[in-house]
Image (cartoon, rainbow, N blue to C red; front, side, top):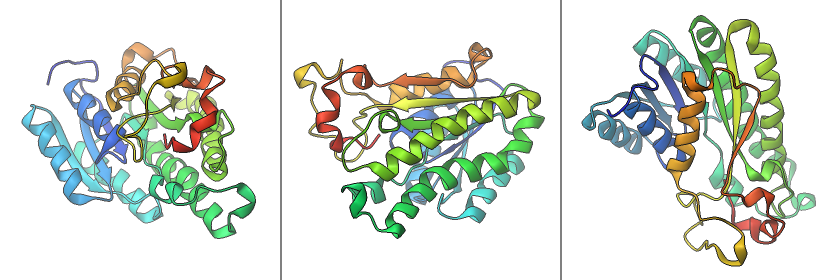
Amino acid sequence: MTGDRLHGKVALISGSTRGIGRSVAEHFATEGARVMVAGRTVDRGEKVVARIREAGGEAAFQYLDIADEQSVREAVEATVERYGELHTLVNNAAPTGVVARTVKPMYEYTTAEWDAIVRDTLTGSVFWTTKYAWPHLAAAAGASVINVSSGQSVAGFKGFSAYGAAKGAVNSLTRTLAVEGSADGIRANCLIVGRVVALRGDSGLHTGGGRLTRIGQPMDIAYAATWLASDEATFVTGATVTVDGGFSVNGDAASDAERSLA
């Protein structure tokens, strides 16, 4: 453990067995948070917990499948049962595998394909988790919800209509949560994530054409999430914080956006 910016806080981080979620979990722990690592892959999750503990942090693993409402509820309950409270919910999990297999024009989607992506991206990853975490967050001091969104939520990317629409809804829901959370002292913010090298299919990305300052790393997102979870951001709620190296403001960026799964 190297810092104390999150000392005393308990965090549940969905989709934290790899990639962005893992970096968020590990960095939260280095800043003093007690972390519930949550995801579908048990062996990877247990390895993340072991890494955190070896570094002097506190963590545990809980199975969480965003396609299963009962699994989501149990993950929240397990976090509170283990640590007694919940201060920070990071909604990071997303059906990236399904999205990667369904890259095509909107009019070619089947209803089942559309529903699966929207359900997991919006309902499972944000609605269910936040719904069941809400009373525990309301009981905690300095609570916050951090939704991990995508550059696809703010720009039109060919082939990703369902995912982009669902992430756009996540942005909107974040603002509503900020308003509804004010009475309970719950802040809600959203991270708009750009190209991150840890994600599937990113190995061939480059910075050609002036499209990016550089390719993003998972820790870039972890740093931003840590700030939003900390008391340094107590005046920040209802915000969409863009962490993409300038990708979303570059007019050339959308030309090869089909390779982005942020």
